[in-house]
Length: 182
Image (tube, rainbow, N blue to C red):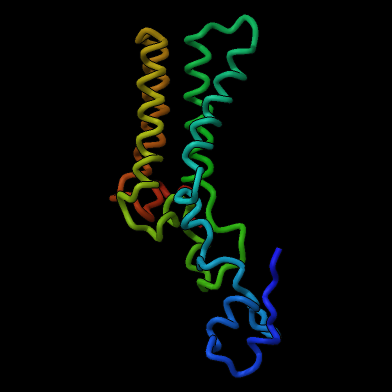
């Protein structure tokens, strides 16, 4: 492997400072406090590379694990997959507030849920659309595989509504009945 001779660039050459900086770095400087470029890393986590595929594979893995339980019928497994997914989505996106990081936003994110922090509160971004359509698709699959059984249908519909209603733009920052206000 060829290594550039940085001593050559240290002298006044026609290559200039930019070439020296790109090839050799700038000794003596350190970027303190710049581990990431986001003020709040929670805002861009669902936009990161590969997260959507990982999310869908996680749902598939949950479904396969539930299918491996003996004496549980396929309709019950689909309903359990839907319920567990929606419960986790509700807890992690609409109940837990604040950030696990120390952020320089002067406490603005402290009272916001993860859904409200995502994409800095901008509505209808690709990440928000993905997280809205995923439970709907899972609901349709669950309804199909349970053969539209009334009991499963009601349970899955209530579960779907509990994760879709908090995602509405009209409910951004709203705490119903004072729940999760502090």
